[in-house]
Image (cartoon, rainbow, N blue to C red; front, top):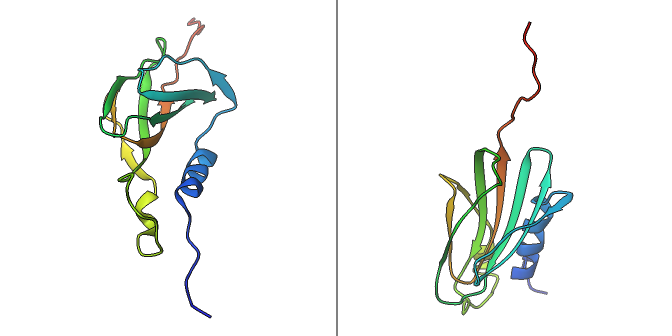
Amino acid sequence: MDNKKPYLQPAGWVALLYRHHMGGEEISIERPSDLDLTASRKDDKIYIRATNVSMDKPVRASIETGGMSIEGGTAYEISADPQLEITELIHGAFRPVAKKMEGTVWEFPPDSITDIELKLKETVTGVDSE
């Protein structure tokens, strides 16, 4: 009997990533041609799931929120060489990497999966002063 430990395949890392970054309300989203995108919202957070289907070029995209202000954001990215052989020696190669978002433009690496979590700024409306 060998002592090999179990490890996640790429699909397992993607499922784990998707499980932790999703809202309950689907929202519409426009997309560049090389990105497969979905978006959802829960409370003050917007979640964007992006797959760059191009095997050889990155895609830069501007993120617009229909007039809502963004307080901050984090991108969780899975990006590895598509030719990489999956073994127990490199099992962490597909582990998502968290990256702080600066601004509203993001570059999605070739052949990557990225979940973006945006925190919206609270806005106060309808406040009367006496």
